[in-house]
Length: 161
Image (cartoon, rainbow, N blue to C red; front, side, top):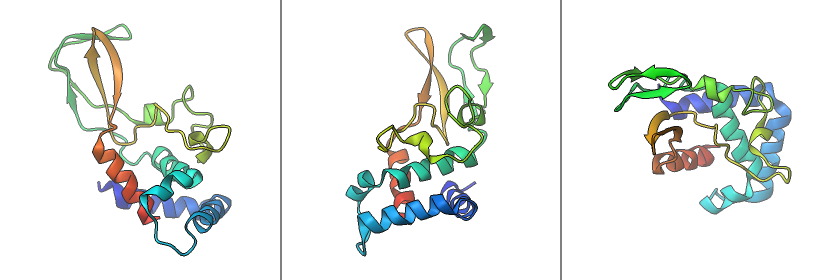
């Protein structure tokens, strides 16, 4: 599955379904860009648009099953023993629709990514393409895929809008 084109398709669908959100994005783009082409520095001035792009990825659940991962050591997670060399396929929907992480998990709601002042905030539970369980100091923790590729992908989506 190609994530960029799939995100765009979902974005078009959701903008048609929620015209008030589309109008807010259009207004923000017109206010910040005017007739100028988008530049990287514009992104920080377009919190709502950035929130909408992230919410499209969360809500659409573009890549529901992650690539298989393999445990490198024996681990216990929430009381379950997972032996070394076990293949694990993370179900990203379990995080992207988690009621303890999202105010309205089953609703397209860009405000999930905005603070009380309307500034963009990337949530720790946001991981539309990757999640893995690793051991660090003998504790399990979720590792988010916040590498350079994620940044490049988000820039690509920003310019595409």
